[in-house]
Each structure stands twice: as C-alpha cells, then as structure tokens.
View 1: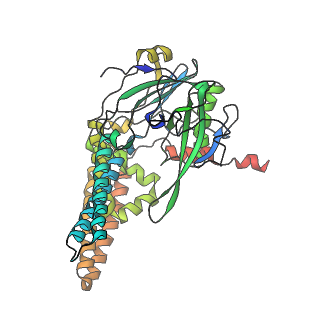
View 2: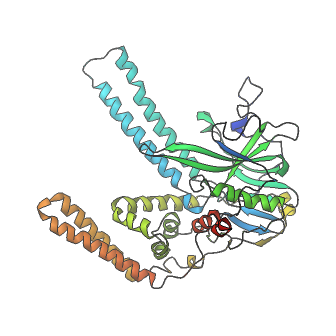
View 3: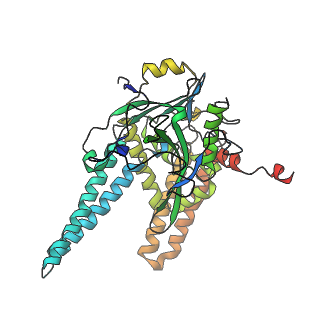
Amino acid sequence: MSAPTLTRHGEHVKPHYAPVEGETTSWAGQSTDTERPDGQVTGIVKRYDKSEQACAKSISFGLIKTIYAHAIKYTARPQGLRGLSLIAGILGATLGFGFGIWQFIEEVNAPSHNVFDTIAIVFPLMFIAFGVFMIIWTTRLELFSPEDEPTIFDRKNRKVYRIFRETQPGLKGLFKRWPLRAAEYDWNLIDVEHNATLVTTGSTVMRHHALVFIVRKSATDPTIIDSFNIGNSMELGEQTVPAVWEHIRRFMEENGPPLPPGESLMRNELPQTFWQSVGAVGPFGPKYALWWKEQLPFMVLIHALFPFFVPFFLLWGFFNWLSYKTATPIEWPQEVQDAIGPAIECEQESPDSQSPTSDLSLTSVLLYTIAVLAGVVGVVNFFHDRLAWPWGVAFVGLYFLGLWRAAKSSAQGAPEREPSVHALAAKATRPDRKKQRQ
C-alpha cells in the first residue's frame, strides 16, 4: 500500500469541525483560554501550559513504539482493545433488532388501532434502524482499518505527524469513503487539554478521562480545525492523564528523555494467531500464568463467573484476530521519513510471543479443562435438581481445586517480566511520602 499524501498544517479541516452548509463558523469554536476555561466548559478539566509542569513524575503508559534521534512515536491504542467496538455494535444491534421487532409485532397484533397506535409503530422501526446503524458503523470501524494510527512528536522540527483513517460524521458519512490521511501540525499551534466525560452503564456512572490535543488554524486564527488523543480514555485516569502529558511536554519543551526512567518500549507484536489475540484481550492465552501472578483477585472473579467471561473473551479474541487479519499496513510519507531520520529503537518483540504456549503447559490446559467441565456440571446440577445440591457443591469445589492446580502448574515455568504498565503508572502517580515527611 502506498503512503498517503502529507497534508500540511491548515490545509485540511476535520469533517466534524467543518461549518455546516449555510454557516461560516464551526460549532467547535476557537481554542482560547477565554472560550475554553478550566472547569467551566463541559468536559474540560484543565488546559495545560507547555511551560508549566503538569505532574511531578512522567510516564509513557506503554504507548511509545519507536524512538528516533529527535522524535518518538506513539501508538493509537493498545492491541487488546481492537475488536471491542464490534462486540458493542453486535450487542447494540441485537438489542435494537430484538426490542424493535418484538414491539412492532405487539403493535401489529393489537386488537384495535387508532391514530396513536399507528404512530407508535414508528418507534419500533427506529430501534431496528438503530440496530442496522450500529452493526454497519462498528464493522467499518474495526474491519479493513489501518494496523495502527500512530502519532510522532518531532522535537527537532517542532512538528507533530499523524497517520489516521478519517471517519465521516452523520448517517450519510456511514456510506462515504473513509480515507487514510497523513497530517503535519506545528507544535506551537497545538493546545493540550485534560477532558472528562460521564459514562453510564445503566447501574453505575463513571468518568472517562482523555488527553486531547487541539489544533488551531494559524497563529492569528485560533479556530479549531482538528483534534486527536493520546492513549485510550477507558484506560487513562485522573492521575495518569497529567503524567502522560508531562512526558510529552518534557520531551518537546525541555529536551527530556524519549522514555521515562524504568520504562521500556512496547513489547507486543501484532497478534498472528487466534490464540495470541485471545491473550491480547484477556487472561486466556499465552500469558495465562502471569495473569494469575499479577491479577489474582481479577482472575478469581472471572473464573468464578466463567459461564459469562470465557465466551466473552473468546468472542472478543475472535474479533481482535479478525480485525488484524483484515488490517491494512501503513507507510509514512517520504517527507516525514526524511524529517525524523532512521529509527534508533523499534517496538520490542515479546519473548513469549514466539511460542503461543510458552508459559501454559499441557498439564495446566488439561487441568483447567477438567475444572471448567466440573464447574458446568456443578452449576447445572444445582439449578436442575435442588435435591442433589451436595453433588453440585462437590463439582463446584472440584472446579476451584482444578483452577488452583492449573494455576500452580502453569506458574512453575512462568518467566519473570517487567512490571505492567498499570503498575508503573500507579508508581509514577503515587505521592512521594519521603518528600512529604520532609
């Protein structure tokens, strides 16, 4: 695949920010401290000053893929998140289709009809249309997309480069072409914000935090023409956003190191097999034993609820594998390659990626399989025949015993590895108690 044409700063406006027909200004407005003050505009937690420290410590959050002489390249999103949008799309489509068709049949089979009943038939059709929209949009988003949509921060030339697939807004945009673009921005014309949005799951409410880069049109015109994120809002938090920004700020403004002390480049290569994709999205895969060692409470929870989590992670792994199998490789324009020079360090290959079962022995697989079968029999026995509940308890007990033996067997040969990204993030954002005592 040939490299996309490089778009210089100000030559292109993001479709979402383009003025609607008949208007001369965009809804996004201008990127100024007056129009976007801290805490007074919905979603904006803080606007950062490039000359001021945002956090005492800095982290890369495991997002840096490649180091150049005077530049660093960030990945767009962790590999384990691919395929998740497609699951959400299928779930939304299932709910939309199911509820819409059920409600439509109820209205059609009603004993009597009046004008309100006729109007009510429109609502089920809207749910069905929503289901169609979700499945088409998420399928286009995940399949035949670029392998990555990286961002390069070029300290020497004071530039930022991106490769990305440009989605089109609105219902019409669903059927338009989503081109692959390469863009160049002037670092001095980029503003950085910490944004947060409230997300509800129906039973709980949570905040998603994002590190957002706002692109101004020119030095004299602060109109917003583009924006992009570093990191994923589902993984970043209130403390990690300023720490991630602080590393970029130090690198670009203070000649800081390409990697924070104690951190390394991304170690994950692109999943090549279904088994590696399953391991990329969750604990069931090549790193099964390491999950037991690092995330014991979480592992106990998902194994206790295995009838839900095992199919979920297998389905997610399948869509992750399918997303990478249909992904298109990317190539930077020659102008960018000439500007940043050759790579000094590229993404490191995980030592256990060569063998899909390097830390998961045959014994542990067999024990885990027996444990799952025992758990299924126990649960079915308990709910099917309550008089036989002692047998159900016995089989469930065998299930947990099998899990323990599987984890122990697998952990015996598990290799040591560096602390996880989340552990490094927690350490970097933890207050320095020694300094506080002083």
